[in-house]
Picture 1 (tube, rainbow, N blue to C red):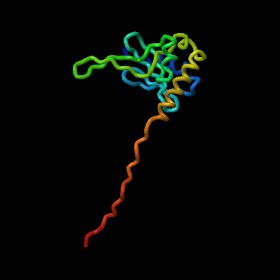
Picture 2: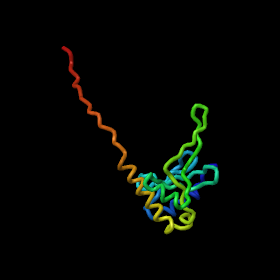
Picture 3: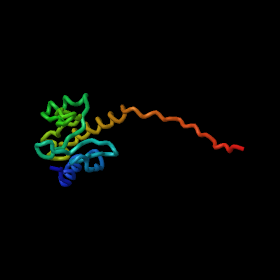
Picture 4: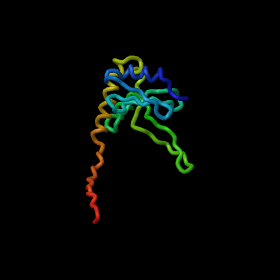
Length: 137
């Protein structure tokens, strides 16, 4: 079942300590971004719609210590079911109750998004040579 706009708006309110949030439809759920950085997803992986916050290998232990689940889904490839995961974790239950409780988790997610953006390699610019059109006499 697709996630609802009301839940997306509520999650944006919870993440408001990061600044203005934008929720956009994505794959039957929502992507939540701040200043163009995706900091969270909303998806129903079978247990109801849930807020999933961006993590990194450096922070996954923090999420797991709180009992948060990793974003994991089944995918079919060449007829075989493969379990895949993204580096997003479910928000801690208490953080879903109020923006002040969400603030440290939201900041952690934004930091992970910033770090991910800074480590992405930028494509090399390809120099193009302009060739003048010469008229043949």
